Structures are given as structure tokens and as C-alpha cells.
Image 1 (cartoon, rainbow, N blue to C red):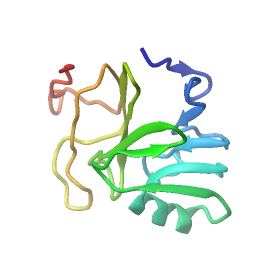
Image 2: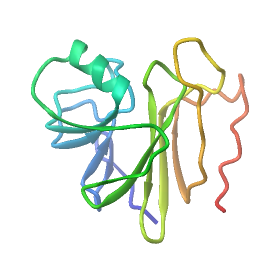
Image 3: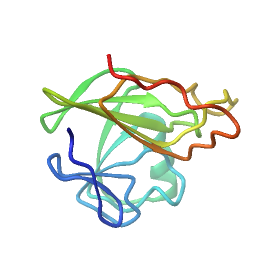
Image 4: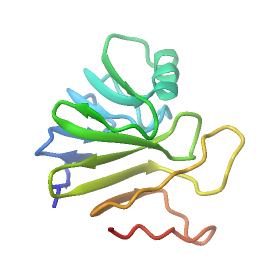
Length: 146
């Protein structure tokens, strides 16, 4: 199982990767460009549209690892895929795959199709870390392992 810790933010210690931390970190995934998800990190994994919004909202130097949706890429020895989260323009979920495990971190997501965000996509994962779920509006889709 991929080790997930909460240390004033979600942290994957084996990967040395923070997920949407509100304080500046050396290496972080930023799911979208709302102010409660961005900080002046040194290096970030982001979607192209989130990177553009962050440049406008939080100018400064940072190394941006920009990933297209639905394409697995090697990032620092990790197999990472971003999937649309449907929350806002460019919002992304992070899917991390290791030799024996996988993790899906949703960030904020929305299941209803909107006019200003890409439609949400899902994938099976051994571990899912879900945020902003409102089951009274729409039920959570099945996220079982294959």
C-alpha cells in the first residue's frame, strides 16, 4: 500500500510528494488554481490549464511539470497520470502507479458536467483519497480494483 500521511497536508513520504499543500513545499501536486490549493512551491506537478492560471494568480519562479490528461508519464521515477476532476477549468486528479500499488488523489472534484471544466474521468486504484464529496447531490461512482 502507498503510504499516505497527514502532516498539515497530505504527504506521500516514499515519493516525497505533497498533495495540494497550503504551505510552500519543495515538491507538490497542485490539483487546481483556487487560492486554498496554491502556494509558492519550488516544483509542481500540474495540468497545463492549472499552470496557466497559477502563473496569473501566483507569479514567481518554480519548476512546472506540466502533464496532459490521461497520459502516463515518468516523473522522478514515479508513474503519474492526471485525470480531469470536473471542479474548475484545468482541475486534475493525480493517479500514481507503483510496481504493486496505485493511488488516486481526487483533489476537489465535481461529478456533474459543467460548462467551464473538463468532464470528470475515473480509474481504478488500490487506494483512493477523495475530497469534496457531496453524496447527497450525486452518488460516488464505483472505484473498485481490477
